[in-house]
Image (cartoon, rainbow, N blue to C red; front, side, top):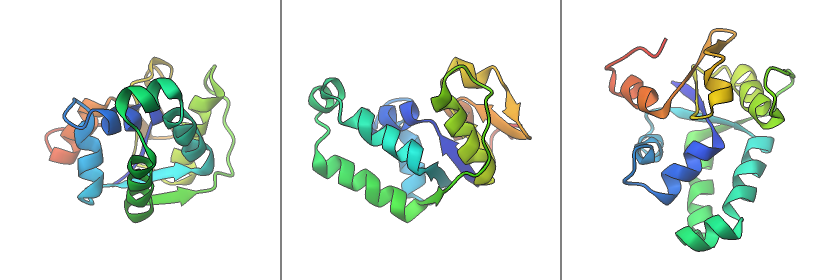
Length: 143
C-alpha cells in the first residue's frame, strides 16, 4: 500500500507517539505501507519541525529529526512530481495531491478540511488518519 501522509499528521505522530495518529509512524516503521513524499513535502516537514514553537515545546532535536529522516529513507519513496494541479486554495495542499498522483498513491491521509472536502482526486481517496489506520488493520476499505 502506498500513501501520502500530510505534513501535519506526520508532525502530530512524531510529537505524540501515543496519540491518535502516533500509530501511523509505528505502522510505517513496521513496513505496513510505503510513504510517498516529494522534496517540497520534505522541505515543508523540516521547516515546520524547525519552528521554535514546535522544536522547543516538544523537544524536537537533531536526533529526532535524523531518526525521522532515516525512517523516510527506509520506508518511503521520494517522487519528483511532474503533474501540476490547482485544486486547493493553499498551494501546499496541491503539493500533497501532486505527490500522490505521480507516486501512484493508494491514499492521501490528511486532517485538512480543504483536502478532505475533495473526497478523492483521480481515484485516490483522501481520508482521515483514523480511517487509514482502519484500512491498515483491514477493517475498512477506505474507498
